[in-house]
Figure 1 (cartoon, rainbow over the protein chains, first blue to last red):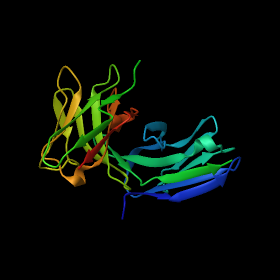
Figure 2: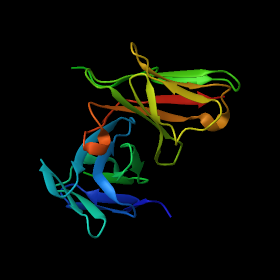
Figure 3: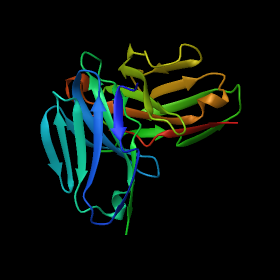
Length: 110
Length: 116
């Protein structure tokens, strides 16, 4: 069993829809990251969370430490949001290296 | 302030050759992480270095792979005697402090290695 599980694996949405991507993890963590990987392959860090909720533009990330679960929400989705979204955790006591989920491939249709 | 730079962006090698991948961290960053993304798989940690020191190499194969981060110059990931299974995208990320203490890691664009 992977230490970081994401769902769904693939997601197709219509432009304007509200999108939720889920991440569950099985280890104690010091931080959780949401990353975006575009079709060209580059990786951008969207959020780093250790508790609560963060918002940036149309993106919202939440984390529940007790339930070992995080969600990434995209409001008013747009075709340019099409990418792979990756959840990654920093295991508590580690040197900070990331443990990654397999990613959620999002396609937003116009 | 330039971001994390990696070169080459694409590298083609024949089986048995050596591959050298370079990573220049963001200015002021002294922590470098290397990750590998195999085709159709998720990213996996390989090695974590600070200037002149390997801190954690638990994710790096014991043979043929080595990494360094000298006092001057970029971090180098070296793969000797490449095999087809080494074909992957190799990403480095840098941070200004300990990622374990909440510092954000900034990713480079990656090097896509193809072994023929």
